[in-house]
Image (tube, rainbow, N blue to C red; front, side, top):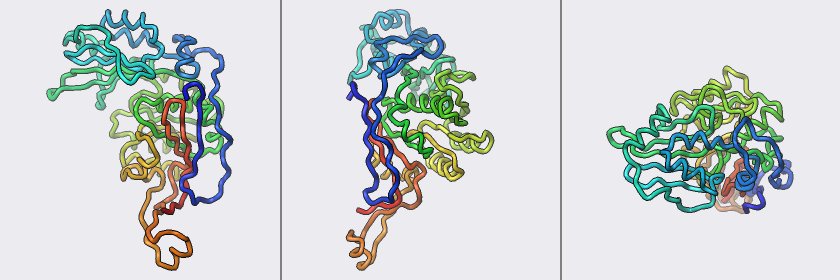
Length: 357
């Protein structure tokens, strides 16, 4: 599917009220364009990621030991670099787009001194053990020992990729909330960033991003140019994300709120509260299929929640169904759910009110 982006629409559930269907699936365009800012943009990167790419890779390489930096600078596939792994006492490893495993960068192990130097170059980590490089979209995550010492770093490359929104541009016209579902590393945050820019600059919407780990808008107090005219609210601690979501609506009059990694019951409730005020939500959650959300007691409310109802004999015969059926508890917070199965292969569900099984 890498050569041709695809998006399929499924109705969930099968018995549903009538509604206008979106237009046929979009093929993602690979047009020409200028990079945002002064970052590097190459034809190889565009081909690999399927759009116009800006990655500030040099900034990330500066925190690595010199020999690893030189190794990666000369790596033919550096435009496809996903992350660099530095674990104490192990060989450094690079992971690339499309590879199931990693590639060792040298034969010797990472020393304590090298790890401390990298940590010092990054600066202070937040309560979620994440940090960034100011003015870039890169993320550095720490692994700590039982004593709190950093014993490993995951240096993930952040890229601004334009073109992904073409696959869901028709859904944005509906002005209804959309939840993106996918496993880690499939590109959810990249899509959030591009949707924020398109809604703010092309649709002329008042967009506020609740940026818990500074991944969407980049590190530092000045947001990255990749989010366009969207505003960004930083979150002091991950546990405060739901409060900042509510604050965004109450204080800043957004038409659209964008939030990455919805994962707690409080955040799910905040999403419902925001949606009930008529504000469009664009969010992400971890998972691979719609069934993952349905079975998750914490997140099932995002699509309305599901409860078992027992019908009487007459009603079951009238419905031509079993006596035990599943029904929605409430209207869905996110009427559209998109499974990001691969970077260029998405499946769209229109979440409706009733489900019979």
